[in-house]
Length: 205
Ligand code: HEM
Image (cartoon, rainbow, N blue to C red):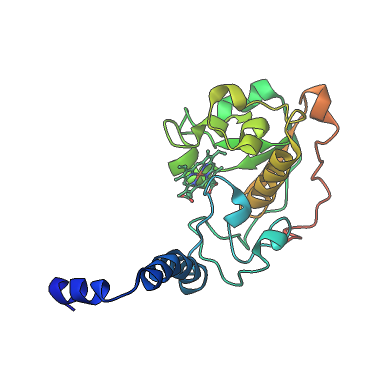
């Protein structure tokens, strides 16, 4: 239909019909988006959308979408048995990616993960270097990349942010080797630090 015949067509419609058409437009767009496109439109700053096949933490949010695509790396099947080496927060700083000969570590709730194979995101100057060589649990929970938020005391988080932090923990636990735990987390969260000495290997995969 060319523009002339379109004008003719629309002018022959009653205003009631025109209004109905206009109202139908957003409704159609809504249904198209809901059912026609399967890609994940949630924020990338939360691990809830990390994978279509992960278990704990994501079930409720994903129950309606069987197979969502994700830009995040999938869980791994080749994780090593967790190590339980003790690290102080001061000692962790050595693993912040500034020395290429050392591994890169990220601690979440006092559990230290080796993220060296993703130095493209955690290495020096990279997007998530803010979390390297430290426990930045509070910032992870808040979905914040600010230096002042990347601190270990996550006790002050709102419930929904604690849930986000928990989801990140699960995300890391399924993708990175655990190399130890932080021995001097702030007292408010120290009791939540888990010893992984006797964990079954990759029990949650
Ligand atoms: C516009 C905002 C953002 C975009 C477009 C974005 C994009 C992405 C992408 C594409 C990945 C996958 C990276 C990869 O596997 O190579 C990713 C992972 C990740 N994002 Fe973001 N992100 C955003 C904001 C944030 C914020 C605010 C945080 C703070 C918590 C965050 C934390 C993370 C973390 C921890 C990962 C996991 C990296 C991994 O270990 O695989 N992101 N993000």
